[in-house]
Length: 306
Image 1 (cartoon, rainbow, N blue to C red):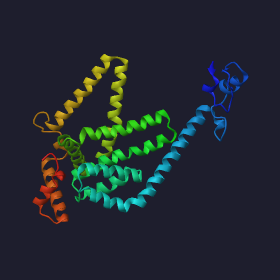
Image 2 (tube, one colour):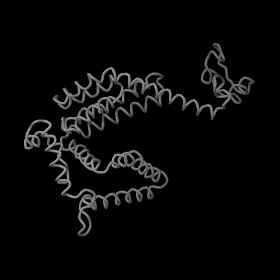
Image 3 (tube, rainbow, N blue to C red):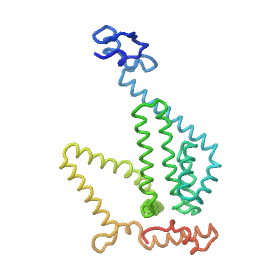
């Protein structure tokens, strides 16, 4: 027994000014208890479960295709100007560059516009790695506005909640890692290291994506579920994961016995040093400066492990 106004639109069953309740009537039995969730349209005959699933898939495809089309169109319109803006922003203050990345990504509704300009310029040595970090951080924040715009269309609680969580996740990540120089050096060092291994082993980017977006979240989900089941089980599983990670890190950086660090088994120290010299010589020649001048001005391109 529920109030009519809480269960149905006023146009469907007008109660007038009197308090009325719906339940046990023929209308309630026909339209609510035995009624179909999808009563009209081409999915009406598919049933509630199948029709609902098909409807969700079709709506997501239409939304995705619309966003892709919007992004591609805006990229063609703004790409030429975006390159000039990106190059100019690398000479700005880091926080101003973050703001440029945010605004540019909001305009084109895609962070790929910003990163597709930055990554090749960094790869050929035109822009030091540390100079593209602020723009990348800004692009990560700006791309959350797409979800915010979509969520504010119908103002559904769940959609708005997820969009706001997405926004603050990126903002808090920036506040955690970017303002403090020593913390800012950690993602830069990780980028250099991944670039180093990816230049030798092309499978590294795929492994990185698999580990970052599937393996690690899956492990954390298992730990959370273990805690829900039993606190002792959760603690044991967490300690096992931390122990395995600590042993791997020690082997990777120090090694066991006389074999040496595990990282040097993939890329020997001599190859690292030779690759670093080749990279510096190539970039210095392209920029028209000496190798010493290039090292002093673009130290963020040096390879770790030397």
